Image 1 (cartoon, rainbow, N blue to C red):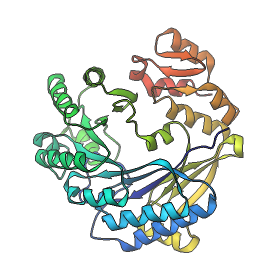
Image 2: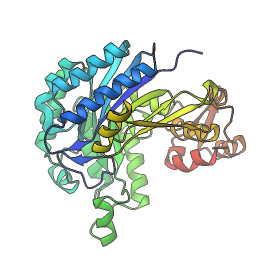
Image 3: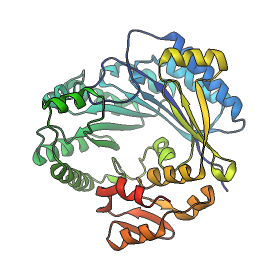
Length: 378
């Protein structure tokens, strides 16, 4: 068996403003946090000691808003990772960035970042105000232009299925975005997450997102417009030009290994076939994370997934990508199989396809992805 790819995820939890739709582990930034940065460096050292000989395939800085870190801090983390782990050839080093932080782009690229994920969300002022963003359309366009001139690979995030958004308006917005030059788009339907500010507004009747019928039409339209511009839907919410997939995100969907450090980060290492798949998770609050690192050398606690939980997770994640599931590999890694009776039923209905032992959604099946993936789990 070939060596499993290994990624490193670094979570920086601070944001200049907390978006009303966000349910990530985030906190309002109040200046530099050198103590947290130092703790993340120590945690990185801990994990390199636990995994001797394993080189990194990718690094991803997420959050929160990791572009609030300085280029010097990003460079220090990349250099430490290179020294402690070593890098595979053509490593992907990605950074999520807010458009307002574009003055740091050249410094991030010089530090080693070669893929920027830009949280544009929209190029329209009214949409950005409705989404509670702290930048306007002009800042979105300026940041994208700057990113395209600096980084090898650029992705932009857009949110659709917003309140009052029509099919024609989204077709125009998405078509214009596809023409601006990025090689990758992450396109997310607005989801009302429990406990968020938007959730409270919906409960009060102050916010009315599109119903399921309109949301489905918007999803179908998204596939059509992206295809017309040569962007393939390699994952349910992600479209890219051929060869421009996010290699780090594929680690999650394909069930490879990754280390998660920083407050609220998760990791996965190993499989049932190699003695158990470890689930790691760090303390959520920065102060708790720092304290745990100072006491134990790492912010993580670890448990082992049961074979059943592992296969369910691999199915739920693996079915999201257009490649689908390698059924033989699932069985090899976990000792369990998908529910072939349920899978056959969905194949008959035209929602799944099977070829060369790979099970994948059809375009129609993607509309029912979560429910079908759960149904075929053992």
